[in-house]
Length: 380
Ligand code: NAD
Ligand code: NA
Image (cartoon, rainbow, N blue to C red; front, side):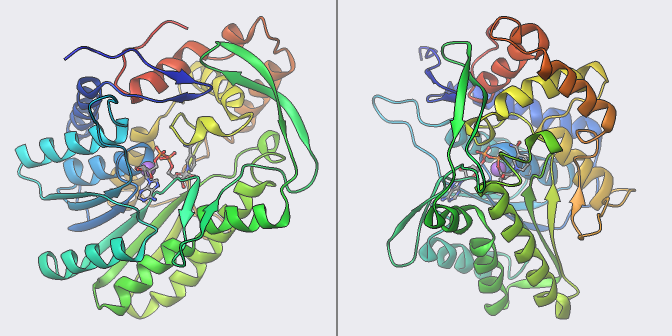
């Protein structure tokens, strides 16, 4: 089959190279195996399993910890004209390699927000596993269809003042000026509905009501807060509001799971390249500066390294998760180091449309995104 050319629009790659996606999943599996084994929970349900943190978590738990996994993702299948999405090929590749390794892997392409998806997955778990030990919630979506059929859209806007700053266009390979407007009350609510904790809670409570939670059941969801520089457009914006709701959901679930000696946590991750992150205004510019600084200091991480620390080193390894005053687990301590943030700010203050490729790790960021879609790195 002909290798397609990447189709880039803004900071989104719209197609994928199937063979490259498979090779990348194989590479992640090899890295996990090389690191050695640990004792993972036996039966793991992952919502958002086809890319980013969810895929990295699945590979870590299955190939490092021997877990049986059930993955749910919502992706575009290939057809006569289009290659299908990278996540579709990633998930197929995962299933293939898991089966070859004798690991149980069950995958669905379905909308995890819909009650019928929940019912079908619950029925499978009841029949095949009896119970589930861990649920990883890693959905990133711009839309959620509600039970009454209404389509709710997440918007990435400010809650206080309109903002303007540098953005990036990876197709044009240029810095651009971006504006972020103030969200209307309904947009704010809708973003919390899509990216907040309600669907997470629905899954956990449905599993609990069906008697499918194993004693000691754990669940976790990924979040971001970032340094002061990003607060106006992330923490203090609509996405930050959704993440606060996710945190409140973790607190409520922790209470609900007490009788089982269970646990529910939000995990604060670092900013890194995924399909979901690069569509956030201003984030690509911050990220390419952060990547340059963290590489300089030998601190660079992508999803696989974050998930290795979480699962292999901390949760199911010799260490323990780093817990903050709000009960959140933290994997973002290197990003937030004062020396890292000083260096990022220094670079940002010198940034122009002409020097961004030198001040930021522009080429590596672009090739990481292309790589995630199965395309080989292309010099920026
Ligand atoms: P991603 O785009 O790589 O992965 C999103 C996953 O969700 C995919 O598997 C996709 O198929 C799935 N999905 C989307 N809609 C779905 C639906 N309706 N039903 C079923 N599956 C669906 O994104 P990611 O960056 O890995 O994001 C995962 C979580 O991590 C998000 O909560 C995000 O906020 C959080 N996070 C991301 C970053 C970052 O920098 N990327 C940092 C901290 C936290
Ligand atoms: Na994910």
